[in-house]
Image (tube, rainbow over all chains, first blue to last red; front, side, top):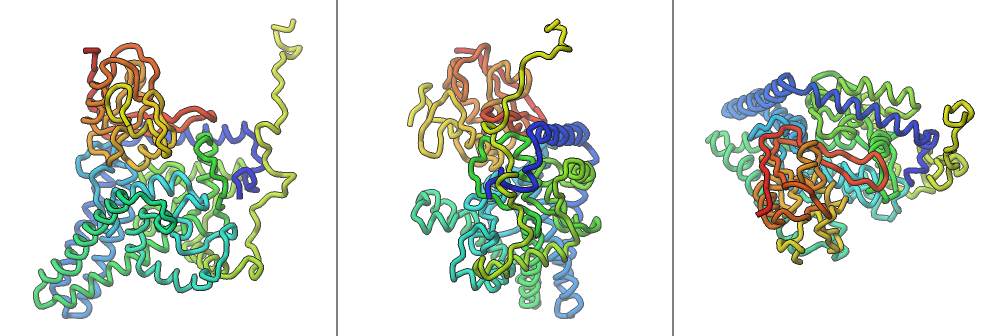
Length: 394
Length: 132
């Protein structure tokens, strides 16, 4: 639906929207002014932890003929991969740590432990997803090009297979992400620049080659007689990382309450309107410190979408004020336990495999036409003459 | 396409349809440069340190109209301008500045139609380029 028709948005007047924007600007200023050594220490601690987990996992796999060692090594390795992708790589590539001017922990240098080249992620995720959040036809994260995630998307018989496509996407998530920036739809329509396509395919090929060699040849070979055990451990660790990252990412925008938009005139929205669209299109989940760490703080997806380049360790602190703003201005702050958020996402995937006429809509976010937010040209002109109380009129 | 100043048209001054104007920044491209972390001059992935180029007034308040760039691209573009306008500016007063930084913030506009701006958040150095 068009942004102006979103029920959660219609009750706000221009002054209220600007007031929300000003409060969120204030949060940003406070974080920028206070970020420093404690934040630096945090990310360095997380990187040290990730590297120790990875090393411990690799070493443990030397004893992987002993099943508990295989299980422990695989768990340590999967944890390291999840931590690297979610809390370190994803956030570093957003530029969250660029202010430190560290030669390694920088958006221009970080190359993460997955098959998608960082350069393509920074386009498909940082720009396409974060700029056009939940705008159908623009944001490729809405179903990753294979799932129908909104009733506004046209149903075709292809969608009947959604439960299967969803399971495959979850299992092979790393590979789906690797192809994400190719824009399969543009290729299918013959709109993709062949030179760009060739460049991207080469980048993907090189990265896939390096990742495959590292995980499925080099490290298994290093463990000598444990080659097969290490190989299966690496396959399992990557599989576990795929399932986890898929679930966390899908919980960010598809639980009930997260709104999808069809309006594409977004380049001219104001900062406050952009903030609102991010808040309405995102969903959080609740959990403890460990859960938030292992999900790259994406349990604070709303805060992440409001401030994608502020340090992730501050999202918890920011969320207190954001929740308060939502309460005071009667804006939904979509959150819940992880199992509920994913359950709702899964239900949506199943429901939307059928045509709209076969399923009931979830609570409709569309406002009655009479209640939609007025366009600027429909609003009464603000009175500009001076009142009797004004000294100028005396 | 060749710009008025004799250098290839900066990536941020050309829209997706190929229409270009060296004295104007295309807002969509500027946002893309900031979020995708690509250079506003050449369109390729940024490297550290990040450079911002702008006239004296922008450097003094640390708020730039032209998106981030490679240091080499920024210096090359400013050199080609030879003290004249360009890179999103129809006219300038004072020398051009190239400011290097570790990171930056994208400042979205508070009014419709206004451009986005960029604020370096960990400045390393400022170099002034006077007319040759």
